[in-house]
Length: 122
Image 1 (cartoon, rainbow, N blue to C red):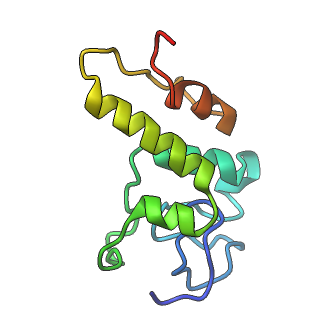
Image 2: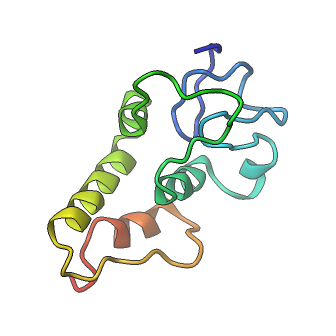
């Protein structure tokens, strides 16, 4: 990892610059000072999770053995990581059940937890 700064959205600890002044996280793609003007870091994090952790910067390779859930946990974002793991486990173990669908746009982290970790008919 090149940097010394941690992304407050995804927990990536390879930021080359502090998360401000239009710097961009290579991992989640958040542009600080732009993306986080209207949306909280928590909301941006949930949106990244809902996309299944895409690596943003094609010019900066992912760290060897990169684990986005481990990255979230290491950064202290255990609630979001846990909710995703529960949702993913539900998808894998109960394919005959309808999988909950996210709202068109997630505006609060609580919306993710409301649908993300529970079956649609719960």
